[in-house]
Every structure is written in structure tokens, then in C-alpha cells.
Image (tube, rainbow, N blue to C red; front, side, top):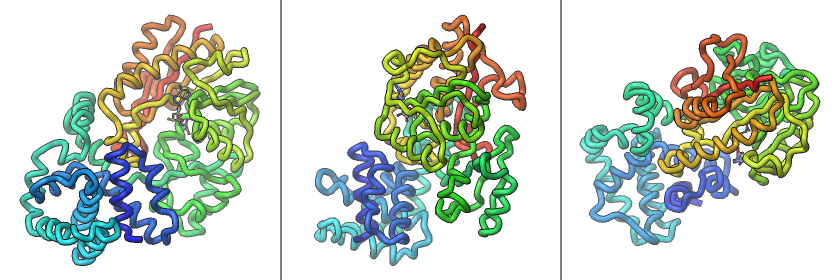
Length: 434
Ligand SMILES: C[S@@+](CC[C@H](N)C(=O)[O-])C[C@H]1O[C@@H](n2cnc3c(N)ncnc32)[C@H](O)[C@@H]1O
């Protein structure tokens, strides 16, 4: 097993065949030692974070691009350049192991070519880097359409800082299960096993801790007993903003893998019922797994949130969480493939799906009830603009403050990934008139 060849194959699948990294990577990591597993992960994440830059270097150093059956060799070269530029692997080892990767990919005859390109890169890197820094897509390593959308939404400076943040690894956030421990108690338990953590800045985010250094979940005290879960700080705000009350009927309409369903149940043990719906049957299995690990109960339904009449039991909900399908542009740090798998044209389609879901769910909300709209997007089309147009078209809807702690003037809230260590997210809380 040559780790560089394995990484090249994963990258080929993601970039050329549109397979998601979360699907392609685990399949390639089977049977690897923990050390090799970690290396393949670093190489795949790293190359996807810097793809257009590495592509540019490779193209500049070759007379013609590698295509067809030789395409995986293109990705092997990118893996090689990535190691030379962004890792501490000594250059002779990086070049040697990458060249051996050609043999593992059954392209023995191309070993010399790979060696030559990598050595030329070492010689010419300064001038190539200077050229790359002159183009926005190469400098920020985001597709041109997304650079433009972010610059239009936030201006050049903030967009640059968001994109730089997207190119870094996200921190590991924990959600302490309020049914077992206070956050302060759990922080002490973490200290006992030499894991340092920081409390979330936001006062609403009362269960959130950010680890200073990521760790294996099984090293977390009481992970298997459900004392703690891994969930980004921004995602944890959903259950606090939803603020479910005793005796209520709650719908989590796009629930899989269930992070927000279980958090809501952790916070409010006296619900009448929690209904967790999702359109993806495979992802719904993870909702049940999460419920089981945490020993919580919900009614899990495979259904389309845009067509609730096919699964709705006839009683309107007190509160609805609509964590809508979205561009996921707020979580690029965690899923570096998103920016290459998404297309500009996806955004309009997503906006229209979100609208259909919102309209359909609104009819299933009690008068006086609350709907929390959430996305892990940082594009205004899916967020403020979506909610503004919903409010214009829905006379019995008004937007209310997300929590008592929130400034009443701040209605919807756009969190950006460059602000507080948390993912990019959007929240808006809507109330139906009595
Ligand atoms: C952002 S994810 C939800 C994350 C989840 N709320 C959590 O915290 O773990 C969006 C979910 O919407 C689901 N989805 C997409 N279209 C849907 C539809 N029409 N009806 C219901 N669920 C849908 C996807 O399968 C996906 O699981």
C-alpha cells in the first residue's frame, strides 16, 4: 500500500467523478495502520484545500496535461507538490515516496516523469508562487464563482479572510450532555486526561467547549456513555434558539444525522414528542444511532419536508426546526471538497427547494408556534434574502429575536467562519400569528 498512490486515487474520484470525500476516503483507508490512515487524510484534505494552485504548478511544469487513463498520475504529482510546499516531510522522502506511487498505480514507465516534474518544481517554486498569487482563484483556492459571490456579499477584505479561514483545519467542538454533566464539570474531566478546552464565547452556547487540540473521540471521558458529542459550536446554537418547552410537539424537518435532534432532547427531557424527518434513508440510520448512543427517543420518519402531507399525522407542531439543505459554504473547512463539487447554478436550485420546504412546513405550525430556519451557508441568497422574501409572502409570519440574550435589533444571525472559531451558519426565528 503506497499512501501517495491511495491519496491520488481518492482525489481522482472526488475531482473527476464527483464522489464526495466522505465516501471516497474511508474506503481507501481500510486496512491501513493509524499512522498511514492519518497521512492519507492529510494529503487528501490538503490537496483539496489548495487544488487550483497545485493544478497551476503542475500545468506550468508539463508540456501537455495528463488525461484519460493517466489522469491519476496528475493527482499523484499534486500530492507530491503538496508535500513539498505544505508539509514537514523532507523533500527527498516526499519525492521518493511519490515516485514509488507511480509503480503502485501500475505506471512504472512514468516514474521518471513524476521525478522530473517534482524536481523542477523545487527549482522553480519561487517564481511559480509569485505568478499564482496574482490571480484570486489561485491565491484563495476557491472557484471563481464563489470568490465573486463572497466578495459581492461581504466586500473584498472580509471575503479574503473567510476564504483564508476555509483553508485551515476546523477546531474540534464538543457538546456536553446537560443530562449528565455541567460544562464546568466536564471541562475538569477533560483536564484530568490532559485535554485543554475553551468555553464558547456566546452566552447562549452553554454546552459548547472547543478543544485546543483535536483528539480521538474514544479518548473523551464518557463518550460511549453519551456524556459528550462532537458538534460545531455554531450548530449547537440551534437547540438553544429553538428553546423547546415541556409538553411540546417538535418537528426536526431535515434532521439527519441528528445532531440537533438529540441536542434538543438533551436540553428538554419533557417534550410531548420529537419527530425527526429526513428525505435520505441512509442518513436517517445515523439519527437512530445517535438517539441510541444517547438513550433518547424520537419518532424517526423517512419523508420529504416539502411534501409533509405524505407523513404528517394531523397535529400541528409547537416548534419546527428547518435545518434546510443548503450550499454548505459555511463548513468548507470541514469538507474541502464542497467548493469543487458545488456549481454556481446549484445555488438557485437550493434557494427554490428551501422556499418549497419553508412554505410547506409553515402550514404544519400551530398559530403562535415558532419555526427556526437554519443553514450552514454563508450566501445571502439562501439566508437573509430567503427570509426577507418569505416574510413578504407570508402575512402571518414575523421575525423574532433568536434568544433573550440576543440584541432585539438583531433578528436573523449570520455567523461567519472567520469570526469565532465556529462554522459559518445562519439562523432566523419566525413566529406564526395567533
Ligand atoms: C444540513 S443537513 C441537516 C443536519 C442535521 N439537522 C443535524 O444537525 O445533524 C440537511 C438535511 O436535509 C436533508 N434533506 C434534503 N432535502 C430534504 C427534503 N426535501 N426533505 C427532508 N430532508 C431533506 C438531507 O438529507 C440532509 O440530511
